[in-house]
Every structure is written in C-alpha cells, then in structure tokens.
Length: 611
Ligand code: ADP
Ligand code: MG
Image (cartoon, rainbow, N blue to C red; front, side):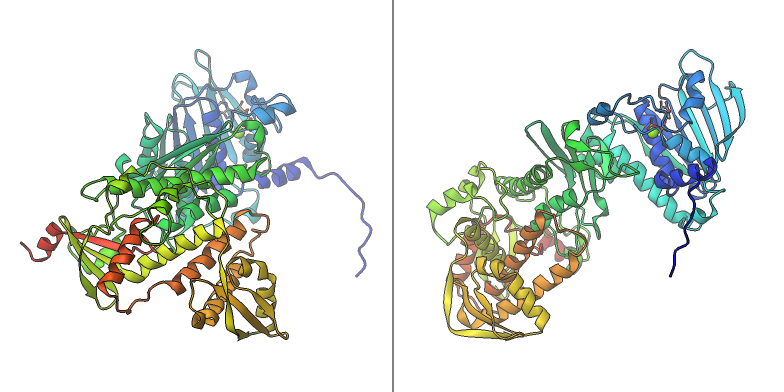
C-alpha cells in the first residue's frame, strides 16, 4: 500500500492540551493523585477528598496547606509553571512530589475546573475554567471551605470534552475503590497528614494524624501495632524499613505497598525482592500485606521515567534489591528465633483461618510450633555453630544472628513422642499441649534448607547413574532442558541430548536414590516450563530470575527426597527428623509455605471436650 505524502502542521492548542493531559490523567484516581500530592507539597496537615459518582461527576480536594498567592494563581494553571524546581539539577535533589508543572493545566483542560486558594492573612482568589478557558475570576468569599490558608480544587465532569476517554472509565464502584486504595497508599507514606475520603456524601476513610509510622501502617491495615513485624536496615546512605502484617494472607500482590523516598511506586524488582524473601512463610497463592519504605539518596533514583511518576529507576538496582530482600528475610529468621525464646511458644503467630476449619469453634487456634537455623545432618554441633554464617545460594548475606535462643531449647527434640498417625503425622506432647508434625512437610523443609546450603557452599555433589536414564519428550522440551543444562548440572544432574527428542540423564544428586532419577528430572523440567511461561513478562534483566528458578527447582528436589506421607517411620527415625527440624530455618513451614507442625494447647483440647 502506498502512503500518501503528507504536509506537517501544528495541532490547534486545545487539541494539543487534551493529548498532553491524556498522558498524566487517565481516570479520576489520577486526578486525585495529582491534587493530593500538591496538597502534601504545600505542607498540608489535613486533606479532604470528596467524590460524586466515582469521581466522574465531581472530585474535590481541600487542604490546609500554604495556599497560592492570588497573583500566582493563573500561573499555576499554565503548562510547565511550577514553584518546585528552577533548574535541571533540582530534579536530582527532589524533596517534592511534583516538579513538572503539568497537573493543573492538564486537569483543567479536560474538565470544568474551580480553584480557590488563600495565603494566610491575604484575600483569597477563585478561578473557574471550562476546558481550560477562564470563565470567571473572583475574590474568595467568606463562605469558602478554606480556613486561614489552603487550597480547594473542584473538578467536575472530567473528560466531558474527551468522550473517547469517558468510555474507558470503570463502573462507579471500580473507580471508587481505586481512589480509596490510592489514598491509603499515599497515607502510608505520610503519617503526619490527616486524610479523609467521602463518596456520594458518605465518609469512607478517616485517617487522623499519627504520631508514628507504625501507627499509620496499623491504621491503614486495620490491625493493631502488636500484629506488625517491624524491620529496618541501612547501607551506604540508603535505608529500608517497613512493617509486615503477621496475620494477613492475601489472594494477590496488591497489598504489597512499596514506597521510594515517600513516593508510592509500582516496581517489579522491589516486589520480587519482597515476595522472594517472604516465600518461606507463605503458601502457594498467598501474598503478604506489607509496607516497605526505601530511602535512597535522591541522586541515585530517577523519578522522571513515568508520566504519572509511579515508576522509578534506581542507579544501583541490585543493591536496592539485596537490601530489601535481606532485611525481610532476616526478619523472618528472627521471628523464628523469638518464637523459641518464648516459653509458651504462642509468640506472635496466629494461623491463617484456613487451618482452623477442622475446628469450628472460634476459640481454637492451633499454633504452629517453631524451629530455626539451616540444614544439616543430625547431631553435628560444629555444623550447628556455622549455621548462621552461611551465604544463601542467591548470594545474599545472611547476617550472623544471636542464636542463644536455639542453644537454650530444642523445641522439637525435647518433645515426648507418642506415635505416628496414619503413617503421615508425628504425634508429640509437652507440658503445654499436643503437637502434630506433618512428616513430609517438615522433612521437605529440612531437605530444602540442606540443599540450599550445599549449593551455596560447594555445589550439589552428584553420583553417576549405573544405567543412564532416558527421558523422551517433545523437541521443544528437549531444547529447553539443554538450554538449562548448566542449571541442571549445578543441581547435580548432568544431562545431554540424545537425538532430537530424547534427554540422557547421566548423574543424580548424591542424596537421591538412583531409581528416582527420571521422576525427579521430569518434575524439574515441568517446573522450569511453568516458570518460563510465567516469567515471560519481561523479567529478562531481573537479577532474581535465576535465583527464583533455582529456589523452585530446589523445592522440587526437596519434595522428591523427603520422607513421603504414608511412609511408616520407626521412633528412631521420627526422632531423627525432629532433631534436624531443630536445626532448620523456617521449619515452621514446608518450602511451599504449608505449616509443617501445629500445636493444640491443653486448654484447646479441653475446649473440644467442652470442659
Ligand atoms: P507541579 O506540582 O509539578 O509543580 P502542578 O500543575 O501540580 O505542578 O501545580 C502547579 C503549581 O501550583 C505548583 O508548583 C504549586 O506552586 C501550585 N499548587 C498546586 N496545588 C497547590 C496546593 N494544593 N497548594 C499550594 N500550591 C499549589
Ligand atoms: Mg503537582
């Protein structure tokens, strides 16, 4: 097809304005984001947000900030007019949320727009615009909602002159919940500001000023500060801190709240760091409720890479990743240890409700029993001492921890063993109650941590198969396996291609029996395939990509080498397993996050019998 040669012409300014606005303003929540950020930049301590019909009919944001000088008010509505930066270098030393001078002109171009503002001690001014054209200009009357100083913006009929945009808006409830979520996100980073939000005249959020970050997180999460796990660390001028809701298990990653220099962001890399660090404590398909604040020197982060500034680019992304991952993972280890130190072992752990449903009474809350430390073979005290000085396979330092708690007690080996239930659960008791251990889940965790340690220290030792196993598969699967040949080799499986649709397995890890070679390889290949499929969303340059794969493959191996459910164990074998659990990190859960043991206190047992 022939493309006609066309002349170039300038767009009429109103059209150009609408197009520019479209980059910043996608929906009502983007308007609110811009307006609320302006209020914060103006030093407001109270921000009131009101919407009608999901923001489609009207949006109003009122603050008690500094206000705008009456003679500057028209300037605030001009593109590229800002009070926040004056030169390019300022971009690398930002302390404000805004800097482009685009929000107000953008919003006013695509709505009926009222701005009222007053600086303390001065007469205020009120402007009304339609589609960016000034329609009225008045001094601010005494009836204004603005107190001694502040600004009020009213945005009516958003997109009334951009019908194409209107079509893409969600139903009222969808827009409303998005706005609510946004305000909560902003509030998390600004505890000194009182936020309220009402929709169609009904108050839906009231977040009074908080005296601490923890209090604000608890307020937004709707939980008590006691249920928050705090973590914090610093490294070369950067700082990471945050709070995890210990009890929350969410169905998706939307409750992972990430903030960089007090700006809420969505960042794949940071999110991966958080999820990877929490994997030992979550079940498959469960996600945490967590707030993470990352503070880096402003010159190490580019906030100008996204129209709505909701993405950032780090100069040292790998360091940031490790810092975030490290502090959250460490926090998990410490929680495990604290659990030991607590005599009644009911410390800080409430089970997700799922696990309770065998017992319908509310009062019954089976508690998982603790454990800690890295892998190792039973009864090797020297190894036990080195436990906290290892590096994990992903190369993150695990900081040496005071493990006095573990030295004092060995919660699993000191249990009195009763017997095996259904060849699957180990029944035990101590002075506090009944303890059930899922033998497969527990051993899986033990094997997993052992593999991880071996891998990071010396690589997995392999043994040659007496008779090489052959795996027949599709050409694509064979190619995939060969692509990941090095990864398999690191895990103790040497493979080679044998014709186009056959793989020869020459060695297996030493810990695994020879007959399971093929089964293990097939499970690992299946796991790799599903990971490949899942990560096609551009994790290519993601430093977690490889380590995440390794972790999953190790989990698969652990599953295959662990004691099976249904396998009869002698008392000696059961005790050996319990002893290794004592020396294993995260023995609370299997590598897939399922609980490995639960505890029923005597009072809970008595409750069952209605005593
Ligand atoms: P930016 O925030 O990038 O500077 P905006 O278009 O959002 O650009 O705002 C333009 C200017 O208007 C700001 O720089 C600020 O001086 C002023 N302004 C906007 N909203 C407020 C407010 N709520 N309180 C005080 N000043 C405001
Ligand atoms: Mg702004």
